[in-house]
Image 1: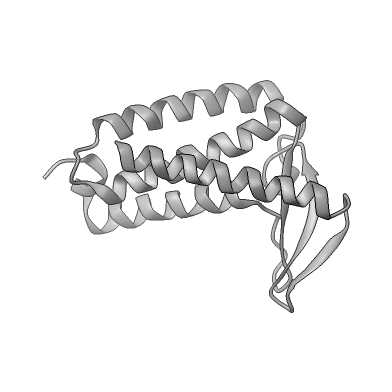
Image 2 (image 1 turned 45 degrees about the vertical axis):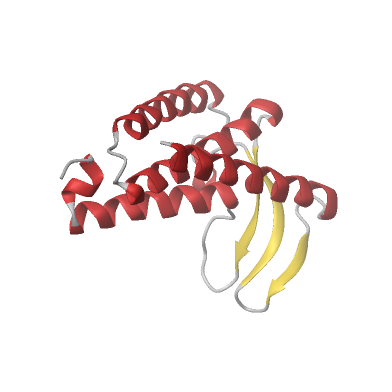
Length: 153
């Protein structure tokens, strides 16, 4: 369980530090260069989810986040100690969910800053990256090894 909680804490810390840097170094709806033709930093305040869906639905986000984080903590607790990849995936999901929850709770919006330049894709943040990687890890483990996800051997 410790590795999952450490991953979650690390994601929350990095996410909040990058968001703090963003609001102090990039003006709202302004950009800073990143890697040419790959990504730049573009500061937005997202009141919804990806592509702005569910904009302004704060109570929905609060309730869903609390329920999901609670369930993920339960899964983390119940996962066998030797199921390290599952624990890391749960930690990524918990950290990502809490990182964006902190923004919604304190600001009423999520701070996003990474903009891909080669595809039309929502602007995102570190928490979103952690959530995506965590989900992809669980899907991959489900495909390759169902016992890894379920914590059984």
